[in-house]
Image 1 (cartoon, rainbow, N blue to C red):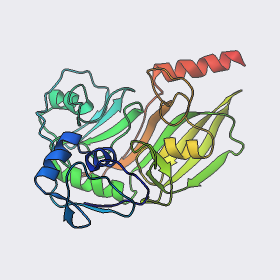
Image 2: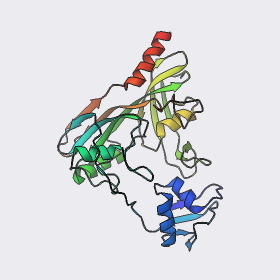
Image 3: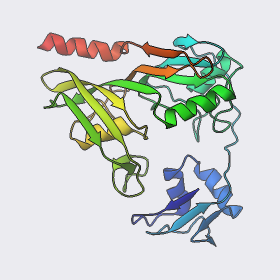
Length: 298
């Protein structure tokens, strides 16, 4: 892995890398001690201050050592066969364990439900082909074997899987249909956030359709053409209509439910049988009740 620093940072390399990668700070310290992280092809200490234009190379990938524990957490399974599981994930559930968070995730629940999951991209993500944010509810597709995982990953990469989301945004969108085509990369100030930027970014395209306008909000449907981290949340904040109750990309007070964003529909080919499948799930009760109250106010 190579990271080119495109902005002024001036912070310790262990802190910087823990913000811009999935590695924990303790694991990064181990990698630095083992001389598996180079800056401009030089060995550095953890106290090294990252500077603009630095080239950081992680020359050996590490896997976080966490023993995954099956947990008896109820799952809303929409579809399951010998190759895939389609889960309607609740808001507030993290998809897979990571640094500082090894329990109560979707993966822990899946391990209790079945012994058949693909190996995933690392030992913390069995079955996980794609992700949705902790506070985003709705459909997520799981692979039960490595062959299914390989095929589904390729389908996601080449945009053969179609996903639609429902979101409630602040303000009134003027146009019924909008396409946001704006690259997304790390936020220059808060490294745990994403932003629209030309620096170290990737193309991102979101298609938006207005479903209903309220007095101060707009209910929309979003279809992803790409799948960047926080893509819908970042794009909507970028055009001045952040998702309601988003604790990261808008400044108003929020509840524990998090952003009103729901993965409502998915269309994909069953990886082995090649059957075309389509599923749609209703909004979470909390989300729907809020909309019902908006209707009653009008």
